Image (cartoon, rainbow, N blue to C red; front, side, top):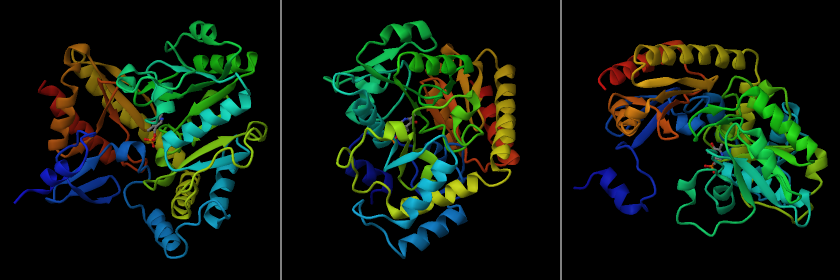
Length: 395
Ligand SMILES: *Cc1c(COP(=O)(O)O)cnc(C)c1O
């Protein structure tokens, strides 16, 4: 008889290289597979399950809403949508919200809104080399990594990429056709690369100078990940449009675009839509997430445990400085950067950790990325670090 993993591999188009486990249960920072193996989860479904697996408040909200009303489409208003949008507006720079089902869709909406706002002939968008903005054709075009473009040309036109960290080069890309600059405050998939404060502030200034919109992609780093509800709060700047998704529903598929009244006015009825966007069950989950994350002490806890995670990784990097370049990140997204001479073994390290029951992800080819649930404990961080150190020590 074939095992479940063989059956799965036969059934699905081979787009993912998955670890050999059939996950069946999760609680907090722990996952369990069908064979009964336990895992310490420092991926959180790629920065999604930020309150941990099956957080009781979220589960309760999902079950309650699923028993009441699951879907209406956007032909009507619903209670969970209204509650979610009020919380998002109350806790951000924004006046207005558009709800989607994923990160890429939130970015698609942002690109369309920026183009509408720019007006006819003003459609160009500048993003950064090394960025990641999604897998739809437009968001792939916005993504500043060649490997995601390969095989999909011709891509939608109007997307330009500025070298990371070079504000003059970015300004040279601005033309009278530019409608927006799109950046992540910290590049997640690109290798846990935070933008320096001065750099993002200079990008904001550039947008003001040329009257173009600043779109911040906080799909990965928004929702408390960096220790503030949104990462840009730490930069003392405001975007014109912000997209978030991943952790918003703690695993329920939902994305959101936040913006100002002024920019929102460029969309008129019929200009953009989504059948499932703002699904009541997903919104009920997101309401529970936002209420939890904005409760007293939650974000302080993320910052202090983030510092602890940073320290643990830094001590490994210092001890094995032949193999590691250093540690970078903000709050509870931290990356251990491998030296080029072991970078080709990065995948092997992640597999070895998996076999040892520790889940982490690889970013930017050579960065071991930790994005644990934000409720991770000091003990869990220490447990992860001791397994990681053992694995690194055998290289
Ligand atoms: C994950 C991610 C996306 C895409 O989100 P999906 O929900 O996978 O479509 C876009 N931008 C950033 C920064 C991301 O991390």
